[in-house]
Image 1 (tube, one colour):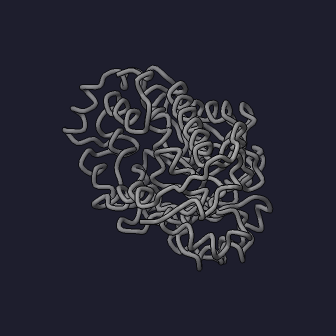
Image 2 (image 1 turned 90 degrees about the vertical axis):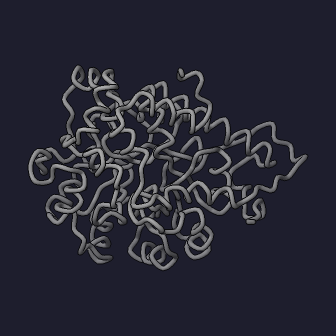
Image 3 (image 1 turned 30 degrees about the vertical axis):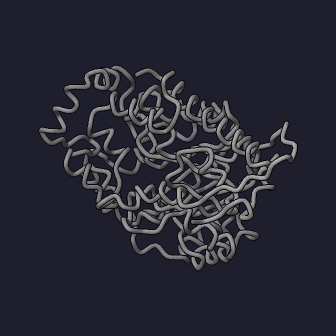
Length: 381
């Protein structure tokens, strides 16, 4: 199977599965507990039907949106995800370059494997910095200051991960940083030698956002350990309000799921919220972001930019979310599988296909701009 044979999410997933050692593929692919929420995230879109308008004259379609003050040429962006250079040696560099090619936003995680500064210097498209709230308040302030000095436009605080999710696939393979593999996990690496060759022949794996502050070879050696030992489960609305004030610019909370919490985000001065259940990787059995979208948009949609992620695999999924009032839609696995499969050309192909799907879908819906999409275009089964 070659990249040119990949036409959709499942094709990219299959190519990534063939190329990655099992423990790394399962780290991307898996969710928490029984993975109910992981499956439901996509199934939610299937319970909603599009209702097209015809004969509206759609020779020119404008897909651009403005979200949290950032102009995007298309209404979806690359959500920040951790550890990208584990999946392909180009990592965040490939994702940032592909996002720039298509004029959209990309995110860098505090568990990212390329520095904020390098990506900000190299690329002109909007950059989000996603970070976690640490027990060490000085570390939180230092990370925000660093992002400000780097020229990052949007701060994104993840609020659904005060402790790590129960990702049983990772426990079975021994996936952690650094690796603590089970025998089965080691065999998986042995049968995919190209990954290992690439891993050792390119620059040493690092977490530049955290290297000064966290010894990943020490106590917080696993990603689970980082969440359990470093992050502050006592974080509350007052703590976040203080950070929003300190940042003084575009600030969003990722992981909001209720109208009441969306209202509080407005009250403390956030400019955006991302409805998200962390791709089904945290609280299994939690509701999908798409199913919560209408409730939240009805509450705060005219006061704050409402975004969603989770389960988005098709351009029609993007259109359904936009019709319900989302300003933009984040994708995660939708670019991680292509990254793992083929690096920058993979991410570019995936974004290009999704862009084509959104454009085609808008034409078939009879909409020439995103603001013409509305709940009137939808019916729920």
